Image (cartoon, rainbow, N blue to C red; front, side, top):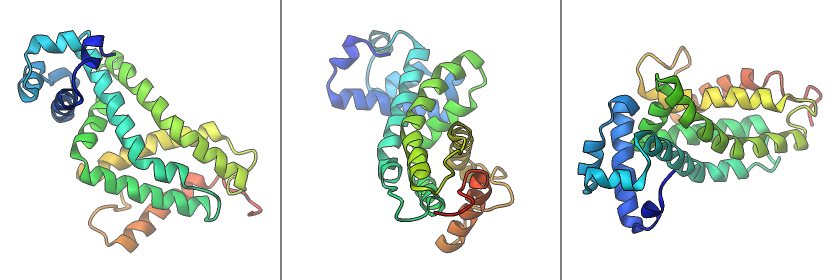
Length: 217
């Protein structure tokens, strides 16, 4: 994690370094991401990066964490906005639509999400994915638990199992529309909003099939 030297920098300078690192790691991944490029684009000496972080992996882990926090902040209205007035399946469908829209308009965050989830080195992958998944769960667990409380999901629903499925699905939905051939037979790109929502609902229905209340509310 960052040093006290990093925390003492101005917010503007920290943001400049963070954005440069997001761009470099998001474009090239951890292994081939260049600290020289990050330093140059941020307008700092390469040696300064080692005053801010213990090393390259520490910087990458920080970038992954901060990116996930940015995504979490943008998705909070959907994570916290479910009150049971609409069915959980409909709320989740609309939330996933917002998720797709977010990653379409935020290429930096999309790139870091790809770098985090597709890192080939297992020790690096474990170091960055564990804290990222914790951030996801901070938002997702209360949402799913509220759906159980409202009766949209079964009282005995396996919450951990559904959360595990969502942790697999969300990165895929963030990246697949921007990687030709990755979507599968249910298209999410190039469709009008109504058709896209119907297609998202087609994914949500089997996702929730074993968790929804069989007797209704």
